[in-house]
Image 1 (cartoon, helix red, strand yellow):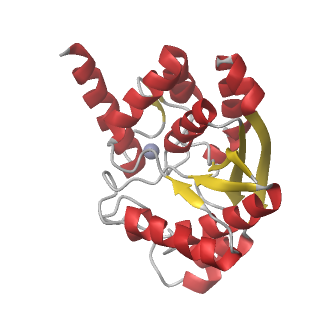
Image 2 (spheres, rainbow, N blue to C red; image 1 turned 60 degrees about the vertical axis):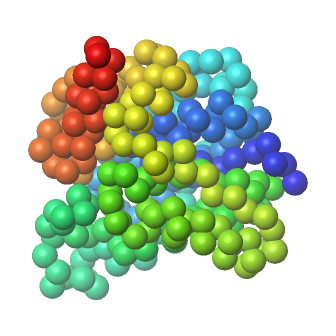
Length: 235
Ligand code: ZN
């Protein structure tokens, strides 16, 4: 078993891009997995290839370590988040900062699928960009949830799985700072240019912190983190 390999849950958003850089800095072999389920914010998935290529260009060792990309189709998740099954539920932004189409427990499903894939690929470390700090109380982003899940997966596969969440205890300003620490200005620029977080899929409007509508909860969070990081750099 290769303890020096990791599978990163990689959506093409800011958080998972920083996690991928974090993993490339630490593991000899890094593979990525994305989930396609007909999500509304599909723009971020379209950025994955560009980001992977961009990261591989940043450092020779990252180029060497970055391995396969996997895309898993989970159409049932799309059915659960939208359309027929939940037609009567109104689509709104909830106080958690996520659209109401968000599937409860989604990260449990993602990590379980990722573990099945990792198992077959000879990897036991899973990396995800979940964070308690910004989505306070969102239950499937909690450290307790994910560490308990890692235990359940380990028991259920009779293998020692580890779930790493490098962003768990930092805020969005901290995520920008971590990007700068890992890959300098070039990584920050890559994230600004090519990572996508906006729930409304807007890529026609460019801000200092990247592309997006500028108003949805994901844009607001990203912008706020950027401003806080900029202010911290000056002080
Ligand atoms: Zn937006």
